[in-house]
Amino acid sequence: MMQGNDAASFAGIGGIGSRIWPLTGPEIISRDKLKTLRVRQNAPGLIRLAVHMTALLIGIAAIYLANGNLWLMIPAILFYGIVVVLLFAPLHECSHGTAFQSRWLNHWVGFAVAALTMRPFLYFKYRHAAHHTYTQHEDHDPDIVPFPTSFGDYLRQIAGFSFWPKLLGTLWRGCLGRFTEEEREFLPESVFGAVSREIRIMCLLYAAIAVVSIWTGSTVALVYWLLPRMMGEPVLRAIRMAEHTGAEESPNLLANTRTTLANPVLRLLYWNMPYHAEHHLASSVPFHALGDLHEHVSPHLQCVSKSYIAVHRDILREVLRRKPNEAATG
Picture 1: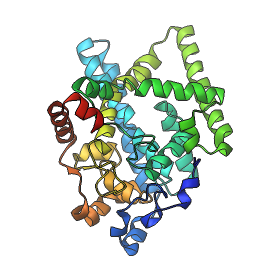
Picture 2: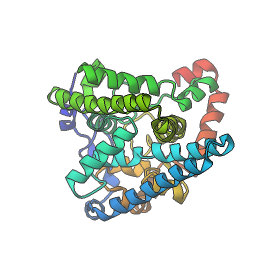
Picture 3: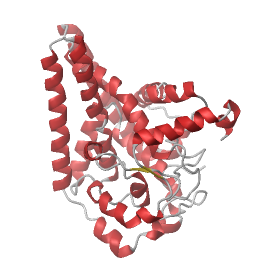
């Protein structure tokens, strides 16, 4: 069994993938074009972060102005929760080191948004690297989303029925310094201590917030963080399902990853991640250059959808068309 980044030495075309899953597709991008697009800058990331923080402040103001009115509170919390969970985008970009030119900005912004969204940054960084190495590999891609076996399974996936237990398990095992066999496939033994230390710091922070909240009788953390975080998660589940589910389970990045032509507001708050096939073809390209990369590679992409609604309409149509046993094996 290959551990950590050992598999990276067995790269496929374009220097990515592994010996058992040699990814193809990046060869369509010329070296000159890639060199131009890979330039990293601080300004685009800082501007995008400021936009995201402004959206968070608008959400906080909306909840505050709702003043306990249930009919106003629910949509305000949902809006704010969606903005909160979309912080997954800068977390993801920072894990690649492409959100900013400065390494320290990538690290500290990544850690901050990871803590806010309850995802350990260093753990995610290694897990996500495995996702890029084994994209859509049934056994080795830790982030593969299986095609729903039924309408009920689809709803459970969107609601995060499996996500929350996995997340809590990650935090619990991280605090104890114990990792599963699957986690040991993408976590080198040399980082066990650092990963555990980061998770313990996060959990101590959460425990301190809980103690202060209970001691003071305050609902601030519940109303302005935990509840919105949980209410917004199904939206992120739906977005992440659309990235690969229903695409080819093959090493061909032109077919195993879906680009979604989302509206400009979502592209803004999701840091251009709807250009997901482009990101997998060249993960070293910063988010702000993915639109240009899309123009370059779009004629070659085999899995493109007009919107996230269209993606889920197609998934549901296929789920309802299949018999249960077909969905389970398909």
